[in-house]
Image 1: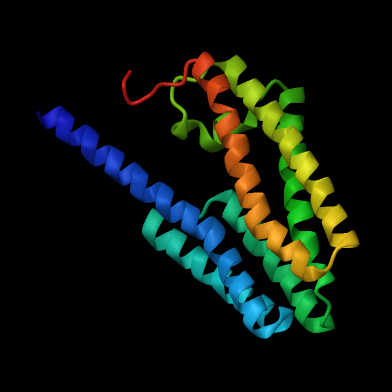
Image 2 (image 1 turned 30 degrees about the horizontal axis):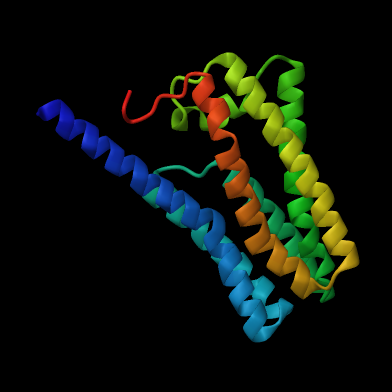
Length: 198
């Protein structure tokens, strides 16, 4: 009984942590979207930067650490957001997703060249039991995904309005990422992913 209680407690904590991480990932973007719609890109960008500062504090005090991904987003948003505000030009903030996508694509492809599936070191705790081959395949798939997303962001940035870009960036990217993650679940299961029933 005690072991079952501990297991449920651990699952609850993991679920709570995952919820907070998702809020930290998408919360500032959604706030940016809302304020952009209400006030325009200038105020929206400023509020976006404030929201990212808040996300850093929440992550530090709620999760006990700030992930490298969140730090990277924070640094890029502060830099490109600052340029956007200084020059009153929204194109700077639009570059941030491209750089993040390229960074992760290069990180994952580079890791594979040195036989290091980097996703294992980044999110390994979330997928227990996955074999080395499974991690290599997953890393390759996500590296390709990030490369395609970088190209897509540049296409949207250069061919469509800021309004269209932002809508696709937030809602489209969120949906595509979720669908791609779901599409990779059979691969993980074939390569040893432990489920709650194991």
